[in-house]
Amino acid sequence: MNPKELIARRIGQEFKDGDIVNLGFGIPNASANYIPEGVNVILQAENGALRFGATPTKDTLTPDYGNSGGAPITLLPGAATFDLQTSFAIIRGGHVDKTVLGALEVDQAGNIANWMVPGVMAPGMGGAMDLLVGAKKVIASIQHTDKKGNSKLLAKCTLPLSAANAVDMVITELAVFEIKDGKFFLTEHAPGVTVEEILAKTEGEVVVSENIKEFFS
Image (tube, rainbow, N blue to C red; front, top):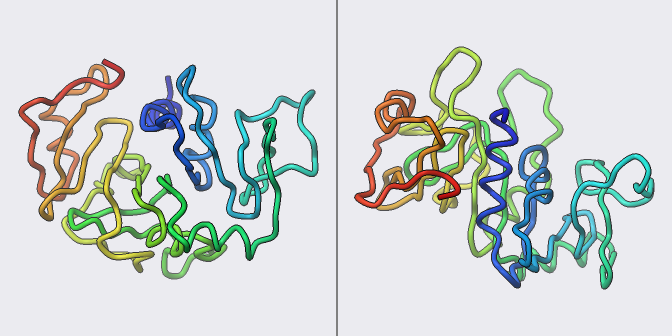
């Protein structure tokens, strides 16, 4: 299983019956394919859709149905579509239970940078700022290190922030953390990954839970 699929599968375990969840670009959107059986989650696309499911195949997709990243989605029975103004009224009104967003960096205070690298062309922040302050729970999905092996889980973010003190949980291909008291609180490790490896690859301060467990256990 590649790192992105592992993260998406683990995100799916956070979905609870009745949740209204907004998924960001990339790995978060892929988690729609891993909703646990029997769990009824209402997924929201910020461009104006409510209640969609797994990614369609080329034989089942409808070109007119897409999420905010332009990827095709499958509308489920009872789905609704609406304008952007209504969609952001849902987000800003505090009606989203959880949002899962990709990140470039996350730090131990719960700050998140996910929209710009100085000097690099970027599409902009999109709805991230609204989701980070409007959702009841914020989950950041991020690969643990960059291509050079540098940690993306930092003591303090170096890139322009999307929001401060907003992140509640971080899910990587190595570990799951909660943000508690200005530290990364390690609660889970991926199969075959040791606590020592996680600590070595995390720049920010980590507290290891006494009840740490393995993903999917």
